[in-house]
Picture 1 (tube, rainbow, N blue to C red):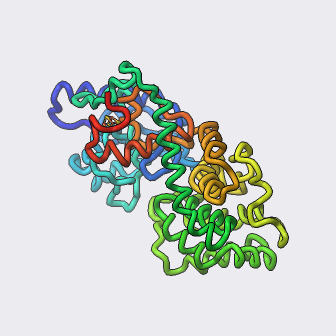
Picture 2 (cartoon, helix red, strand yellow):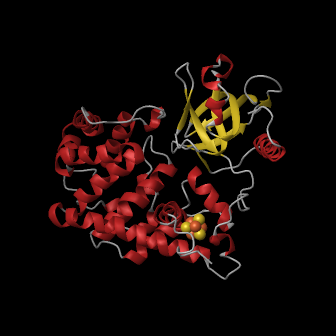
Picture 3 (tube, rainbow, N blue to C red):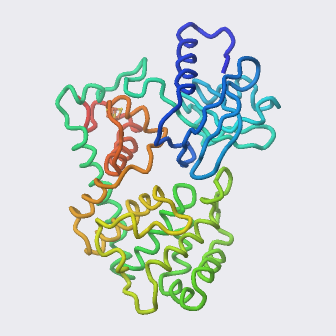
Length: 368
Ligand code: SF4
């Protein structure tokens, strides 16, 4: 950090950031690249030239990270201070910032290391200084914030289901479910490419592979189908790398369609209330299973008319949030709430995407 001749207000904010990091952050924390982060040990203050904290121990979606942590008010401070070509910063494993003004998911060092970025609000339950959007007064004005977020979550669920309806009509509920699962496992980085993989290896072909050689044969077929597609591998942890995700999809398919005569809509998914348990497969953690449930299984079930919108929405409201993204943290601060359920998070994602990022302050559902 240590910006030279920082203004007093800036110095206070830098000190607040360092104090907040030193005190230890409790989850769920979400890196800008989408991974969940747990701080096991924040490290010790550097106390001189070099990174702000030394010897931190972190866990990012199951991967242990040992190294240094650098703090900045803005992500662009890394380059402004020349850390990108300073060997002293080659062991930095986390770049914690108050504002990700570069928009990049990782911070690059000349050694080739891509350092994950975490957005750390200094005052998480207070409006950010300098800007108080109308929603900061929403609770005082009598808005039921949870109810508004749930209404927006319903809109998001409805839109996802509607997008799957043509595929259900043409190819059946099982096919729509299979492709939606692949897309959800691909995540924001590789979801579109994984959807193409599902087009190339449809459910019938996938089941043939399973009957012939089990999950390994299906994983190999999915890998072949993905060859040549633009897949993002940089800054992706091993468990979320495209090959690993396709193997997880194969394992999940074997669990959902365990025999040649298993129904197209899996018996394991008879009730939305069972989610996410039937989706937790080898290599697929609970948070990812929640993402698959919310983004694939529940919309497909609604699109196929297997579940009512009410039943699916009740499941989304019951599921815990898989973790708030850094870009939604300011919204939590302005609203004075935490997005603890999957429904709250889904509603917040829609609010942020359709209103906050479109200059809709004063016209959004929470403008007081
Ligand atoms: S658009 Fe977003 S930031 Fe603006 S008032 Fe609405 S919720 Fe708040």
